Image (cartoon, rainbow, N blue to C red; front, side, top):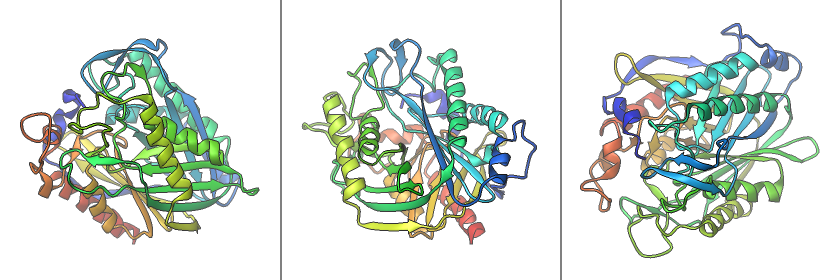
Length: 414
């Protein structure tokens, strides 16, 4: 990503603050009582989901992000804001996935404030993720269209309201496995990549799928800088295939993808995405969907009670960010605000209790690449002199500081 302005603060070292915030619904008096009313008028595990369009008003001529500046010549597929609400007898959380390259803390907080005003969901119970498509409108840098940003806020707020109003009792089915979709460690192409996935399917009382959470780790860059059409990349085809096969609304959350790209279909540097096509993106997404639905290796029906804890992290005296774990019983979801490397995700999952656990990057903020200390400067491949990811990260100590922050959360959960 070429978003140097947003990364400037992340160069400073992180210092962990010592307090955590638990997700509870009594902390503030919201402008809307919708969320509290829903909690008081139902019981058991309930889920609702919604999807709204966040395409720019003008799909021709929109400034696109992810590579060098370019403008759109049209649209291939609809960019969306997708929300899943998960509620039990005491807590409501909102997980939101945006087809955008990233979101800064300031923008995420502004969006959360609107959502709280219209729903009553506490801001610490709202998690906003970006799928990291490189074929979407500029959202992070000086080319940002403020009118477009306002429309994303408004449409996302509406998605949360719709999801809240669609809640129904469900059971959770969780599956995990390894996908045959071809990926590559772009920094060290000879290293094997473990393409783990997790899918949580929420079925209502008549066994109809209401919504699915999809987690996989890979840059959505099948399409390259020569593609001028707006698209969610392989993520679009993944969700579409899942929805066609099992119904409901599929919501994708990217994982530990910082150094993982789709494998090239021709010889060349994995960073070079010049030969990517929409057919290739479709094949990648449909392969991943097929594996998630039919080629899993673990399967359970999960009994869920919601707990979530957020650990505040300070990057300097003024700027802060946060990390969180959403604990759903046998499922733990770790959320953090950057592009974690695959090995960082593995280290984080090692300290989570499980048995099902996964990582979501790019949540509630953007602090650059999360490069483990033993991988800092350790690359055999790049497209610049030196290792690219180190130019957009906070330093070799960041990964360890974040792991320690997650340890504090896990201690709190226990």
